[in-house]
Each structure stands twice: as C-alpha cells, then as structure tokens.
Image (cartoon, rainbow, N blue to C red; front, side, top):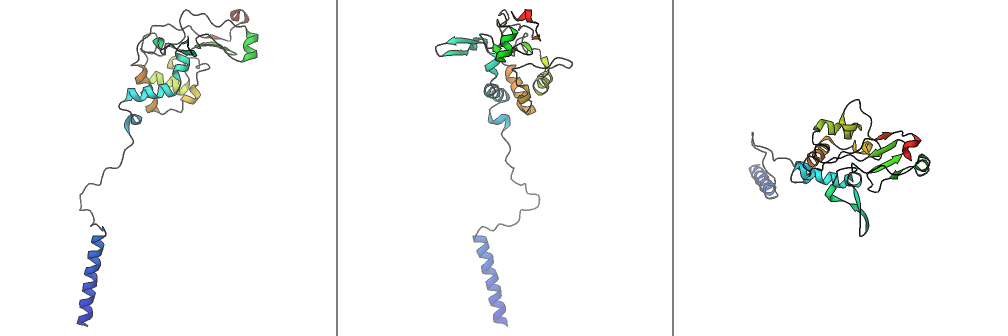
Length: 207
C-alpha cells in the first residue's frame, strides 16, 4: 500500500510539471487588469477628423457636381481653382426647352453644375468655407441637409433637388457626416453666390 501511494504521488507531480511546461498558466491574481481589447481606429484610420472627411468627400464624388468643370487636354476636368464652389454665379441656365428636357430626361450646363429636368432647374451649391457657401452653417444644419435632404439644412424648406443623391448619403454614420463637415469648413473659401433653383419652370423660362 505504501508503495502504491508513493507511485501515485510521483505521477501527480510529473503531470503537474508537464502541464506547466506545456504553457498552463496559473489563474490571474485577484485585482489584476485584463489586457485592453483592440479598439476600432479613430477617424476611419486617418490621422485626424479633417483628413478622414477629405477622404469621404473625395470618394463620395462631391467634386463631380459641386466643382465647375473646364475643358482640358483629355476633355472635361474639374477646375480645382474653384473647388466645391458650385454653379458660377453669372452663368445663365442651360439653353433648353421643356420638350427637349422631357425627351432627354436631364440636361446639364457646360460646367456640369446646373441641370434641367422635370422639376425645373437646379444648381450645385457652394459648399466651401466662404460665407456664400457653408461658412455660417452649423454642424446640425449640415447633418439635416445630408440625412433629411433639407435645403440649407433648415426646417420648413424645400427638399434638395436632383442630382443631389441625399437619399444615399443618408446612410452615412453621424461620425462620417461630422468628419465631412469638418473638412468642408477647412476648405479655401470661394466667394460665389449660386443662383436660386427654378421649380417647375413655365415654358417661357426654358427658351
């Protein structure tokens, strides 16, 4: 019996040594801090909110509508000296009658910042940091414009008109919209008073 007890003790000790060698670790001491869990990168992985916003504005195609176009060696290209300044103030609407608009469905100005369609005439807004752009806007206004399609981000205003794809932009997260706003508020100001939209224009206005 004594021999069996000795052999059992030796076997238990050997198993303990084996488990330790294989990496079995003792339970954490009471009060010890657990390792910090990985966090999602701030600002979408960019160094700050403005840089993240710039990335979102670029990949969302904001320059496609809000930056006037000019003719370059390979055709139409954005005029970055007027980046995001909207439809030029003194440029007339596209010369188009309603019958042609109905046949084509949509027509654009030579800068690709003004459009004629069944709704009338719409113009790309100035979204630079200038006072004629969104310089005086609040973050809440910008959020309402993007999320709810409200003109100037105000209650009791008309909806944003085509081709503004606010119905798609409404799926941006609040943090993404805030980053875009922060970037737009940092852009070079371009003084440009965009014409007011013409809603359901009469035939004479389309000549």
